[in-house]
Image (tube, rainbow, N blue to C red; front, side, top):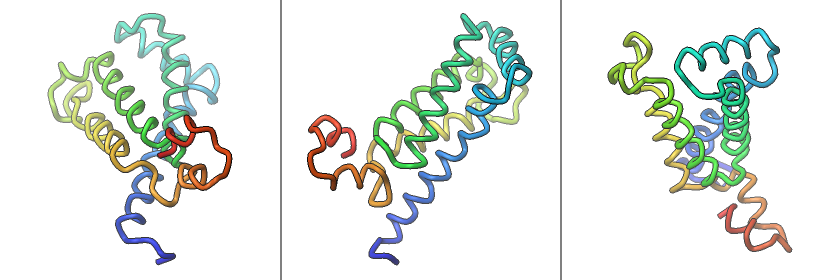
Amino acid sequence: MFGLSWSEIQLFLIRVYVGLDFIPHFSEKLFEGPGPRGEDIAAFQHMGVPAPAVMVLLAGLCELAAFFGLTFGFWTRLAGLGTALYLIIALALGGHFQNGFLWVNAGGGWEFAAFWAFVCASFVLTGGGPLSLDAVVRRLPGVPPLLRRLSA
């Protein structure tokens, strides 16, 4: 289909879905106003996260970057690595490791976020594929070597 293999299409669909999955997360932290943001700040404070207001903003920016990098396949390898690290840090700060493995455990175990971290990390291996902004950047003439490497 369109000169692409089924595995390239599969990679595209998974990458886009994972990226789009971050929309509700960054939206509530960055754009939904003081009510939802305040709830996130209170939750971070309850978990003992230092500087909770700053950390909510930082978390929202990380999630926005994950959305953009994965959905559009821009610097996909870096986005995958950064997102995986972000999710592991969120697991640790949120105390999920102490709640056991299963996500349905009280307080949420580490199963679900670890799964997403693993999926995001897998894009370090594959990059964005042929249906990505990375592929477009690689084809453009005059792209600086550093940007070309980030899009590899």
